[in-house]
Amino acid sequence: MIKMLSKVALGLAVASSFIYAEEVKPEAGAKLKVWESEGPELKWIEYVGAEFNKKYGIKIETETVAMTETVQRLEQDGPVGTGADVIVMPHDRIGSGITSGVIMPNYISGERINTEFLVSAKNAVSWMDGQLYGFPLSIETYVMFYNKDLLPNGITTFENLKAWDKENKFTDKKQNKFGFVWEVINLYYGQAFLANQGGYLIGKNGTDKNDIGANNEGAVKGLVDMMSLKEISINNPGDINYDSMMGLFRDGKIATMLNGPWAIEGLRKAGVNFGIQKIPTLNGKALNPFSGIRILAVSSYTKYPKASQLFADFATSDEMLKKRYEMTKQIPPTKSITQLKEISSNEFVNPILEQAMTSTPMPSISEMGLFWDPLSSALNDVYLEKAEPKEALDKAVKVIKDQISLQN
Image (cartoon, rainbow, N blue to C red; front, side, top):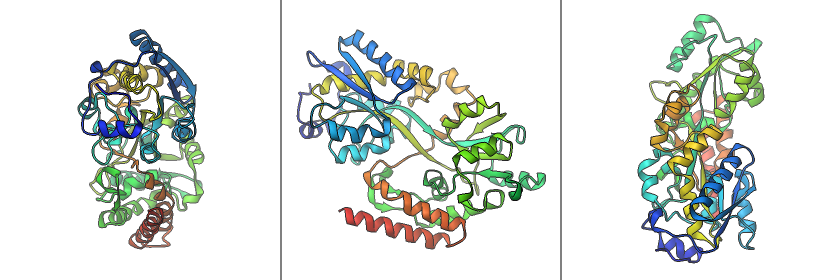
């Protein structure tokens, strides 16, 4: 049985082993505070809290804190005893949470995460030595959206898309009509092209800051392939943003675009006849985009580590995750739930799930923040033909490495 230890001692004690939830008993008199964003996610957390209370007799208090702000807030509130015991956070903040010492490792049911969760979800919460930090709640990534009035059955390859565009004389840049649009200078989307021929941002599943593959031969080839799509897309990345892209798609002026599940409801309400699918292959290669995992993590400052870990484990049980899908429509990351008919047959869920299975979790080390601006600038310079792919990527990686050195 794990004893209540300091955050450092607890991390050392459980670094090489996991315990099943049924072997852990919550601390007497435990009561927990959980931070979650406002919306259906909060309603679900409240539901889980009520069910957890029925089983363990532990009261759960919820407080609304934006998911992207929970780690920073815990850094401030944890030391003075006013922070949450359990927080919801994006997986790419794990590195910051570990570095600042505000989240503790999982010591409950680690084997279940390793065997029963999707590989992308498991990798997202695995740290450098394979130790887990966080319990996955949902997974999301982006896919290809297509106008069914133009492409009733979608498209399988970008080469076919270009052929269709040419045959139908669809792209007319003066009229703001395009065969394919994406946020060119947003690295979140650009990573899929960088990785298409073997490039990568950070090695060892996104945890080794000293292994940067953003300017290797594969990354250069990926940007060359990306440039082949410019003929059916925008001329200047600055000419379009998310809102204008969505507007043009609604108006039937964009045949296909890269976008995520967050765009679905708005298009459905607008009455757009659209479908979604896995991203087409490019030059014979499947594009594997970034994925994001929403997770529960336990605070290092909690007075009730056993109860907190039990709650996180309980919340990510199949039963609770199935209820979460019903309440939030966010894709659960366990293999068994994704095979349920209501998920596998949903035309707006299954393609995202299929894409997520081969996606790359966004690197979670804190140094990832140093990659965005230099590589976004490189994407912009290449697309505007101000620099060759190799030149632009070499420059960006030099900037990144210099900034990493300054942090050490």
